[in-house]
Length: 350
Image (tube, rainbow, N blue to C red; front, side, top):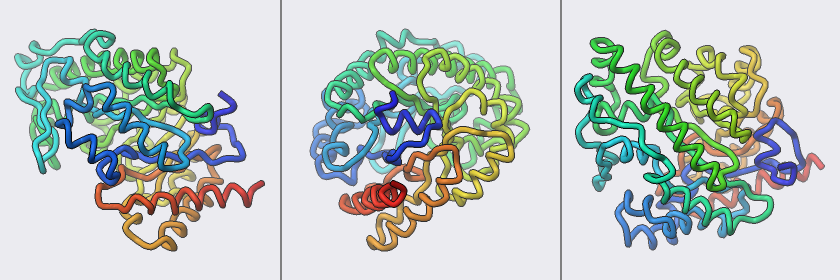
């Protein structure tokens, strides 16, 4: 583990190299990705191990990165639970038969992850076989609340009306759904580790969709259950609690269970680190370059990267990343500017 910069940093150890990778680093901004994608619809590509492994590896061939994250989607587990996942052009994900009542809940099940998601494990194994000796394989999943928002709404939503209706009218159904997702996610991530994942990231994009007390009451216990189960795997665990710092106080029960916290771009990294320290979090931070800055000049990208790197020094350890996923419109060469800034910053510390 000590020879891999990402794992070293994720465990809170400062090395001579700041690890760097990007959310959605396998994506539409790369022409080689688009060439593969032309042969599949999105779900088919997630379920094709050769294709998923290929697009996972593409950014590592092009850039000096320290980690790969398996190409997949947070809603893949919903397929095993009994829903049909599709991605409509220009619209995003849709799940058929949304879960709206206790009767709908009876149609769900906890799948056998080793059998029903074997294609994800196979893709991970294929990537691991081609990683460099200092590169890390990251597995991931959506957090129970975030996955539940799609399962209940049936698609992306800003107001989460159906979710709120279930929460207020059938709280037991809501809690039961989160529990099913949690159990599925634990098995799904354990399968990924067995296939070769060396670290795990949990995406909770919609953590801010509930009030703080609702989040603390309904969501945090499921996260504690999730991370406690995953802790037995002895791999670094990273949590992304969505936008801003509004949920940081409610995260305190997780601080002893997670190794790193991903910081969204909407908050100053230095202030986020100070807030987390005040609340008692002594782990690693990851982030938080604003991804659309890659549309700007080299000078803009590198100035923003250097500011983040300076702030990152106040944390126990820092993994450089964007604060949210890369967008399709960015020029591929712009990522090199940020990577060069990170490597130059490291040389000044030698």
